[in-house]
Image 1 (cartoon, rainbow, N blue to C red):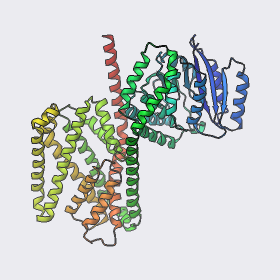
Image 2: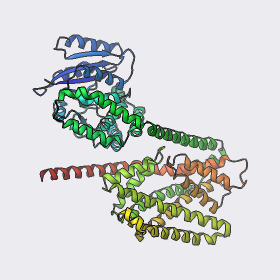
Image 3: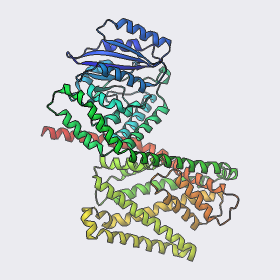
Length: 604
């Protein structure tokens, strides 16, 4: 008879633990299943410890259905789960299963039969409880809690390649062979264990199903222990697992798992093969260790540099009380204009991506505006998270092929460089020969760049490899429309810099303002993201162009960088937050359409 091991990590839950265990013992399990409860007391206070001891005495003669483990010091939920998992696996056979259970009353053990029914018979299978399918209504806390969990689940899905609805669920059910496989990959001590377990399942090629469950959430006043810092930790764990993952090992691992699941060999021999499996994983990890170390070093160094650049700008701006006084005295028209330039830049950028994709696929203008708004907000992350989310949306919702996505991004990048070069060349001509040369030079350089791109795209060598995607450059509407919109976008950005200069009353003319704006955009092209680098580019370029006009007042340039960046962030972040709901809705509709298509194919 297979056994379900319910592992309950507990820390200061004296009022709910006894009822939680009683609810588990009262569950009507399928005929072939029995249950054993393993409580891990994570150094709780005396009240919880007394309740746990009483439970141990109460159930000690109940056919070994209860086991109490204790930590001498508080280590966290993740550490308690790992302790319970290890003890459960010492007793479990390959037909048994293990489920996580919180010690409060948020989750209903009466959902166990439904979870077991969805488990299937594969050794490498797991089931997640989906809290949101049965959820209805709720107050502000519940809505906020659900939104944060959905956002974390979204990021986790993009990293792991899984397609689940509730990554942070407290009900995770594993076949014992699968838990043996992922346990060595689990290292998180606190709530970061949830995304790490999900990532570990993806790394070993597990089959993850879902089942709807009942959920009665608590708030902080009721004793809920997870907080905002745990959410940030979850994001860090998701990003870190992506860095650690070896993409080349996943297909091979999945094939190995497939062969193992479908092997006609006796299942009891599986446990004997575990050491060689671990050795193979260790070998793959060793092969990719250098590459992983480089990625980690690059990301950490880039993040540290971006934070240092931001800190430098803010530190310098703090030494400029006159600049902040001018900002407080600035007219409403200047401040509104600063924000409108940022909004116009976001809208024009969304139109650029829309028109650039037309030769491949006609995308919805409004949808592209929403995803562009979210990408602009996420570009404030230390890595290019905005580009990653935009790519995920294009593949999952707009159904672009990977090669089309790469070609689309490349065409947008090419036309952006052409626009950047055209405005820079026009500005330099303005400084050397007069303002009348600006637009002729801009048009000539833009046309030269556009025609050069079209000529390169028509080469037979390119067309053989592009497989028809060269039309992203050869199509006149996409090419010239993208270049024109990029130029307009850069003009809006220049307007924002100009207004910040006027607010601070800096002796910089319009041509110098253009160069400052172009330098900031050029700095944003670096692979580490825009945060910190654009602000530093504004401050350094303004200082280089002042020609001693502000000698001894270098803090003005840092104030300029902070005000210009704030003028963009004050629009990009709220608009990006507003875009979360329509984008989530589009993802949900797309997922439902895929599920209907799969069901239709199965019926056919």
